Image 1 (cartoon, rainbow, N blue to C red):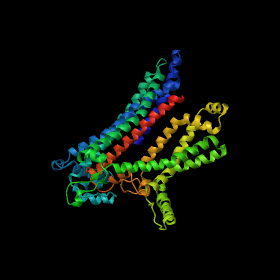
Image 2: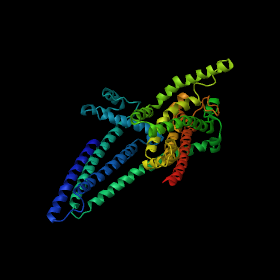
Image 3: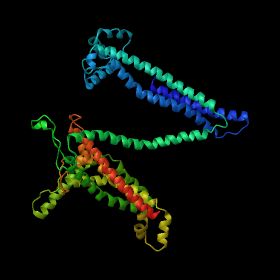
Image 4: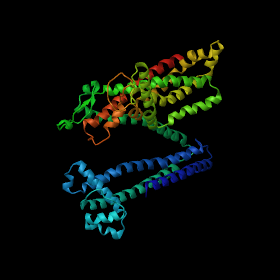
Length: 495
C-alpha cells in the first residue's frame, strides 16, 4: 500500500474519531446527568489527536529508518570481494542494484524466469521494459535486487499494518477515555502548544543545522589553508597547482577582495535605494491622496516580483552600455578624447541596478511602519502648531525609526546576498579597488563559482565556498545584533 493511501486511511479514521468523540461525550453526559467539562468539539479533537499523532509519528520514523536498515542488509549480502572495496565503490554497486530492482518490478512471471540466466540475459529484458542500466553489472546484483524488493515489500506491508493498527488503537483508546469529567480542552490546548513550540523551534534548528553543516567543511578547509591567510589575504586566485607542474592543490584564498566587493556594491545599492525608498514611503504615507496611493504603491511593489536574472540582463544590455557611452561622451567633451572611464561591468552598474531592485523593499516596509504610528501623535503635533513637514521629521520618523532600521537591515541583507545581478553587471574579477567605475565581485558569486565545475569536493578550491558562506553568515549576524541594539534603544525612548 502506498504512503498516500496510508495517509488517506489515517485521515479518514481521524475524521471518524472526531465525530465519535463528540457524540460519545454528548451521550455519556446525558446518561450521567452531568455537564461536560469542555465543549463537544474539544472531545472530538481529543479523539482526533489520539488517532492521528501516534500513527503519523510511527509512519515518519518508519519511512526514515527502514531505507537505511534495508540498505545495510543488502550491502551485507554482497560478496566478500565487494565488501572489501571502498564505500564509493559499494555505493556505485548499490545504485546498480537499485536500478535492477526497479526493473524487476516491471517483469511478469515468465520474464522473471530468465533472470536466473545471469546479468547478460537480464539487460535486454530490462531494456525492452524501458529500463536502461548505466553500466556493466555482475550476477550477484540480481540476487541482491531480488532481496531488496522482497525486504521493501515486507517493510511496506508491516508499515501499513502497524500504522493503521496504531490509528485504530488510538481511536478506541480515546473513545474509551472520554468521560464528562475528562479535561479534553486542557489536553487539546497542550497538544497545540507543543505544536506551536515545535514550529517556533524549526527556525532555530534550521539555523543550527546550517551552521554545523558549514562548520565541518570549513574546519576541513582551514586544515589546508591557514586562517590568517584566508581572512587577511589580499589576493584571490584559487587555482590548481597541477597547472604549474605540481601534484598538490595550491592557490591564494584571500578574503579581502571579495569582502570589499560585497560591501562596496551593497553600499552603492543602499546609497541609491534608501533615499528614494524613504522619500517614496514618506510621500505615500503622509502626502499622497487615496487614489494615487492605491495606484502607486502596488506599482512600486511590482519591482520586487521581477526575477533578479531579469535585472541582470537589464544591467548587462541597457545600464552598463549606457554608462559606458555616457562616460565616453563626457570624456570627449572635456578632453577631446572620447575614452570611456566607466566600464560596462562595474561597481556602479551593479549598485544602480541592485538599488532599483531594493527600492520596493525600503518603500513598502517603511510605508507600513510609518502608517502604523498612532494617529494621536500626528494630531498632537499638528494641534501644537507644527507643520506637516515638522511633524514628519520630529515626531513620526523618530517614532517609526526602530521599524525603519529593521526594514533597512532586511534591505541590506538582500543586497549582500545578491548574486545574479553582480555576475552580469559587475563581473567575476576579484580585485581590490576603490574606483566604482571598475568591476569587482562578491562573496556569493565566488561561492557559486567554487561549487560548480569538475573540482573534487574535498579540495581546498571547493571547501573554500563553505568558509565564505560561514563568514557571510557571521557578518549578517553582526548586522542583526547591531540593528537589535539600535531598535531597543529608540523603542525605549518612544514607548
